Image (cartoon, rainbow, N blue to C red; front, top):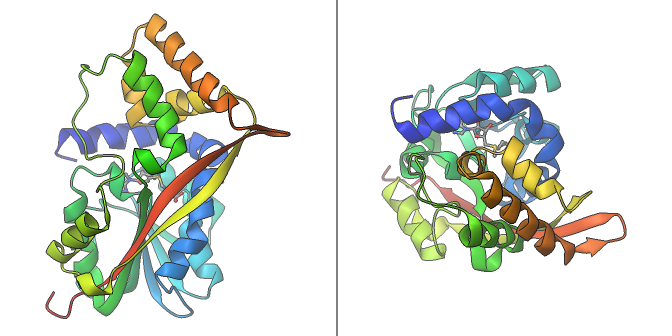
Length: 274
Ligand SMILES: C[S@@+](CC[C@H](N)C(=O)[O-])C[C@H]1O[C@@H](n2cnc3c(N)ncnc32)[C@H](O)[C@@H]1O
């Protein structure tokens, strides 16, 4: 892990790996069926699941009769994935430097992995390299703030009350690119056929039990936002927490809170020229 952002993310994921399942998986798992549908994952296909975390995407691909391998740079995540899905192969490795030969897979998928990378475009080029001719890459990434109420409510509280001038390694935007054209351009640069790209916005509601759940999740089970929160004064933290809880109240329903989240689901085929 040479660059500072990758090192920061790596330390973070090792620290929070055991919390991922109980905190974030009820949100991120909802995007797996649309991702696998968009990438046309089907029986007998070889699949690489990049940034596999606890292994849910690999498990869903296996349920479709495909042959997945999950890859993650966190040893803790790989250990959890192996325990949860002992029949599936999981390996350690960096998404930006995939430990696989050229033309190894029919599909590469990445559910909420690219926005955690220092160099997402390099990871896209690596995905193109390991795909077979005609193979397809599919990934999800959070939709930009104006389309994404969950991200907005956290961001509003941080912008209003946090000190943003803290010592954190710079990383890519949470939503990677602003619009479809930017995704197409980046994928073309990485070796994909821009004309083959599909781009959809998938919306869910994330059910959380209490108004405090979101602040606790960001503080204790996240990586990048947790890093920012860890560098705030107790007073700023109290203000951020109370602003988040206030916004969450508007999503109250009978069993807790249902917060809308939106994601871009993007796929593209490897270019014949790559
Ligand atoms: C938000 S989690 C998503 C996990 C899983 N894909 C899911 O949908 O539940 C992001 C995952 O990416 C992994 N990750 C982050 N940077 C990585 C890198 N450079 N190489 C490989 N994995 C990475 C983290 O360890 C973490 O497990």
